[in-house]
Image 1: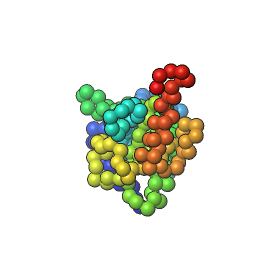
Image 2: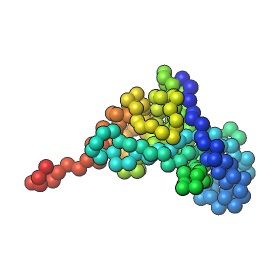
Image 3: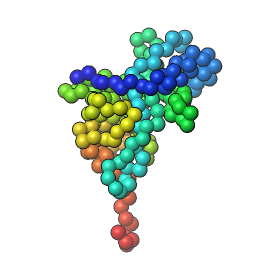
Image 4: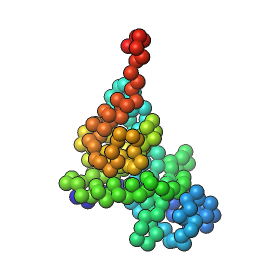
Length: 195
């Protein structure tokens, strides 16, 4: 089924386009690929970037918060990097360019997700406690990409490199993967200490 990519806020896209048009921003980026290629680079596949904070906190399902929008950057027929816009007190602003394994892993995960039997809205979910990023396949296709929590039918696809023991590029029901991750982060009491 095709993915239903949410529409990024126009100011977020404009901030990325402005950075791409700036020779200084591209040249000074810490992404060697951008400084060696001539472009033009096309931002596509806007993905809202959410962060999952403190997944072991009691009191209901973990909460997510929007931190930005990431655009994959294409040079001709290949994805070479990503550009991210972040929400500031004054609105959307360009944040940074990036390249590396998460960019190619996200592209592969998106391609694989298109072959799933159900349609999803793709997002990115960062789990800082485990230095982990996942492709979040949200089941509510009409949802605002900037809002909402993890739904019962949502899938999480860990991007490579994934933490040890977690298979990258394997879709997990969000509740199942979060259970495994919560267990990893919960410390067992030391022998002889009160429970």
